[in-house]
Image (tube, rainbow over all chains, first blue to last red; front, top):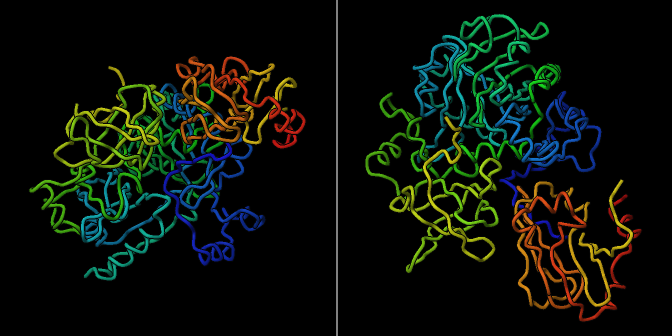
Length: 420
Length: 127
């Protein structure tokens, strides 16, 4: 068993010059990196030592050294589904966009309609290139009348910042927009599961001081957020998440995030809260068919092909990529993202495994982009792209696993649904 | 402290063999299952298949990885453990007993001399 064939997720190799910049700038969250040059071509979040103390198994993800699991992926996944899980998401990026023309700038740069947001609300949205391909998928929060916070994928922070800068240069009202990449000085955690609402107020007591006006954090509705005080500092608490469960995400200054984690862990433990790593994060989001950049989404795939047309507001006016996306909405797409489950006991489907049509004229028709053994369902599940004509629920397919084809069936999304 | 039973022989690739005369039972070590955690699928060879020492003959999959299993000894597969196919978690909980993979009728019993002793395997895994 010497050759562990790791079907890891998409990894970004950090160019040497970028690593040198990291070592030279020595930002607070990189002190570990500066001290130990041996293996460390990766960035670390402020919670790195916390993960070590908890005995986490660490892996490389998008240029970051992150916990894949603390105890077991299945245990952590099931803890989130049944009680609560605590994730470090400090590796993600935070970009502030503000100014009198921030709204039209964001509406020109992102697919969803930010004018629909009141201060204190957030929306899922996509940043496309001129061909309608995806640069990143992200959340946009309206902090105030002319201030927004974008939460972007860890592996895309630099590309997103460069793209926004480029778009701003060509924007007529550019002097009325400022943007600031605050990723390096910001930390974040996600607290996800049906029992989180029991203890979130004890973690962030009192009324919100900005954003949506609530007496308690647990009063926030889905996609709403509020500002709360934590040990004298303002933190943002939003009712959002990436697992399909109820939950909250917390954004705080990097120097405060460890204290936030400790408070949440201590408060949540009696309610069943467990630390959870990227392994469980991936199985949870795959079960509910949430996309992960580099898998369902990339520069040559459009949100329409990925089934995200709901987040593309064609009627709001012009935006980057609109031409292609409007054409796809009218004329249809050639490839479509489908969810599937294996129909017999088999090895789990994994990214890049070929998808075949079934029957006499069986042909290779596509590829798996995300796949795993579902901890909740006990069967292999996945997402993949197939020709649009074959993208219907109940269509039988085969997934090629190590040279042998195993039967699967297309199912409606989400693959996992809570009962009742 | 690593669990490395004294009555077994070991391969560098983390398989164990319980040699009894011209028969051997094979599985993966406690160290291996601990590294993999959550085993979700086991693919075993066909009964009757000829295997050579050092050749891949089975696959073990965890949530995140698929790993080849190498036969530590040469011979013919005489039995496979259906229990781990039905319940892959057995490999995690009973690596040396209920989680065995297959039995071989050895074609060259002397080969077990090439395997690691418990002390040598323990040293390899840094125990």
